[in-house]
Each structure stands twice: as structure tokens, then as C-alpha cells.
Image 1 (spheres, rainbow, N blue to C red):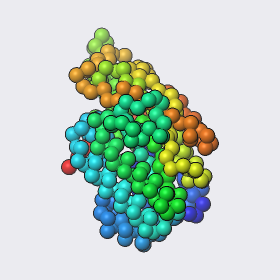
Image 2: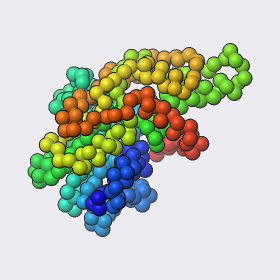
Image 3: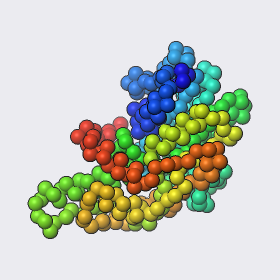
Image 4: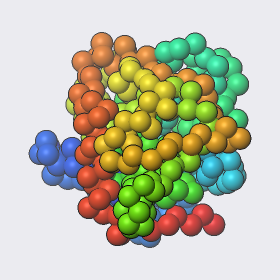
Length: 323
């Protein structure tokens, strides 16, 4: 319980959930730094930090993340900054003799048209989805770096690939958010706007990207945090594990669930001129299940909790600016 555990990215949705899960289990020696205190893109600064703090475990939850729009508009930042962040952390961990490194990636590392559900062995068997290949390429290099260290140095470095995540501290900025939080905000704002018009017969509609036909899987971030704690406390036999629910639904079905939970009653308009992204992205989670871990939060329960968090924090949201 006193192991020195460093969690880069601790203020993000994933990192903060991991911190809460570790503290709830009684871990007392968590090491955290804000981006202002430690720029993870700066190799020398990261190396110096490791030499000073001497972490025994690193859980890498730091990344530049965003949805289709952000990935498409800022390809260089999504490729280069993610590679800088993870490469500095992985290399510094190796040099500092960090005993365990948990690298968090994304299901977008798998080929666009890979067989479904996605198995770990499908990595690098086909072309990536063009709308997020920059982020995917960066994450693939992280997976391979951890695999190389595991093979060459025998260290317990593993990679967990979560499916689409959502939950408290998610990004609700419509320019850079993922599909689920973006829908929550859109339906909520349309509902509020309709109520403010004071015209009973007028209900503001909501326009969503694409056709609504792609299928997606969603994992509540608190469940991912539990999976990370499980990986911390157990020695895995392999280097790469998918983390998800093993269940998916169409984007149209997702929209209807969120619309119902938010209480919006207007029309949903699908803008088919906008990209759909990958047709389907379901994770095969049998390796993680065999290891002894399974997700427990249902999608509707998770969305309700996330919407409640959104209502409690919406006044504090800041629009994300990408330089």
C-alpha cells in the first residue's frame, strides 16, 4: 500500500478515476504532477523527475485526446505530442528501473476493417481508420515499446487498450469531445433552449454527425480504473489486453438512450455529410476476462451518473484551445 506509484495525467478523466480507485483501496503514496509542474514533452525534465522521485510503478494516463474533428484538424499534435509524452515516460521508467509500467492506449490502434470483435492479435494486420490514424500510430508505438522492454529486459510492462470511455471529468467541449459526452451536452442544451422559449409546441431539434449506423462499445471510466488496479495487483502473462464490456450498440441507439435520460423530446437530425468513422469497433475482452476482471457498470447507469456529473459541473467547463 506504500508503493511509490506515479500517475501522469492524473487530472484527466482516466487519471483522476485511477487515483480515486487507488485511494479507495488504501494506496497512500501516489505521486502526481500537473502539466505546469512537469512538461511530459520535455525529455530532460522527465528524466530529472524520475531521478528525484524514484517511482516504483508508473500508470501512464497522460495523452492528448479528442474526437474525429480534433484528430482530423490537428494531426501533427496528435501524433507528435503523444509520442513525446509516452516515449519520455517509458524510457525514463526503464532507466530508473521502474518495476511495473501500465500503458493505457485505445481501441483505435486496431485496423479499420479488422474482424469483429477485435482481438489483440489483430494489431498491425491492416490499414487504420484515417480520421484518427495519427493518435493510433502514436499509441501503437507505445504498445510496441512496452513489448520490446518486456521481451528484452524481462520487465513487467503491460498495455491496456480500453474501448470508448466516458464518465466524470469527461471533455464536453463540442469541438474536441468524443461522441457520448458531445451528445449529452447537445441534448441538454437543446432541452434548455426549448424550455426557455416558453412555446410549448416548439422543441429544439438536435443535429448529430453521420448516419447513426456505426456500432460502438462504451466503458464507464470507473470500471477502467478498477481494471488498472487489477492489473497493478496481478502479474499478467502477456503484454497487451483489451479492456471493455464486450457489448456494443449503434450510434443511433446510443443517441436515443441519452435523449431519454436527458429528457429531450425533439427531433434527432442525422447529418450524413459528416464522417461516420469506423463501421464497428467491438473489443474481444476474453483475455481480460480469463485473467479475472470484468466490467460491472451498465451503459444506462453509467450515462445517468455522467449526466448528473455534467449537471453539477457545467458552469465550470472551459472551451479547449489547441495551439
